[in-house]
Image 1: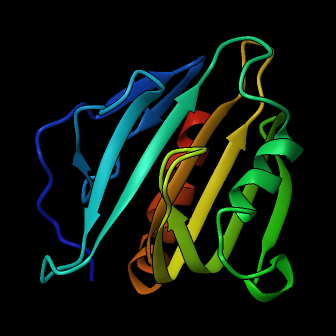
Image 2 (image 1 turned 180 degrees about the vertical axis):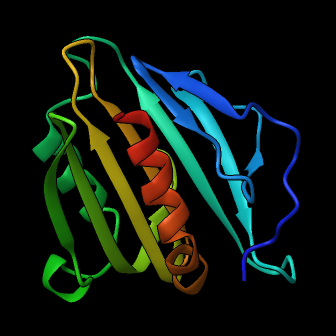
Length: 163
């Protein structure tokens, strides 16, 4: 069960052209990098497990193509793609293109080009919301069980921005 205590943060927030509704159980976190446009922390009820939710937006024609980002996200796992239960779902929600990405395995956490910290039994949930003003990239990473518990809130948050 995900904690029901959340830090005071905005009920809605905008990244790129998209206005998202904040899941009430997620804790708003000040961004830790100029590349990050919004950030949340998700904790298990016993506070022993944590996942992070990060939003990126690089403006028009920034951040690379949808496929390049899907490939990069899946490449952040130690195991080969065929072993991480990778799922890619392209959808249209209210005439807006969104690509959902999911994978499980040993996530290699760290900055691009820097040292990586292996995190076994992890999961990545991602969504790429396409826009002429620049796509918005949303990624949840953390312990697989906690990320799975957060899937419904994640999908509801993404859909809230596509209304």
